[in-house]
Image (spheres, rainbow, N blue to C red):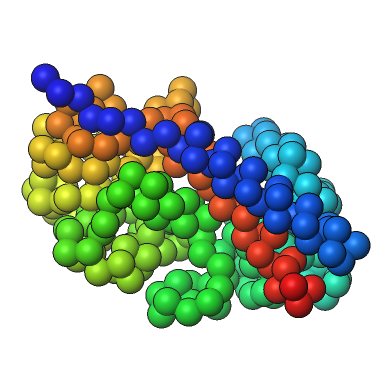
Length: 282
């Protein structure tokens, strides 16, 4: 039985970071200012601390200055909003990343909206969602943007295809659906209230699993030859797709880890360099 080809996000992300590093070096040489990404972390969630450290390491490799702001877990919404507005007003900062989750006591949306759109390199604000939806210049949500780059790298044209997005989060499910729609896919959103999820998935030429439930999507529900994007990450390096059964039916599939994850960080760094170039008028 023929198995699906793996979509290697690690290799593609490496190429994107290398190209971003070249652009950052050129920008630094021409302007005397290196691109700067500010990361804001509230509390000490172990996974978030690890993610932030990883992003800082990748910044260094790409010639991007990393400014890290640590705030105590008890930080209020008003305090966090104030910090993000200060960073937005700082000309030395080109991009801002608020590591989420931020804690249930904080209004996360209010915090996101305190980020200036021109520095929203993580693509989390209302403004960024609007530009994604209308195909206007702006910054895409990093994971959805990385998914589209993967599809392009493997010559998957969404035009005319049926795409099923399982998940409707504001920074993954909803925006990836809009990006696919902009590429002329016919998009169906599925979620926890969807009746007969299996039937919807069986119709899909492209499946994007982004719901945060391990092995929710089973191989028996994958249309033969479909492209499967697993954007889930659960404890134990387990995705939202049952990989072992899906790989026997899909034509292309992302592994977990090594598929979507590396593309998220690569997109973040690429957009930080782009933001710096725009702000410096280069």
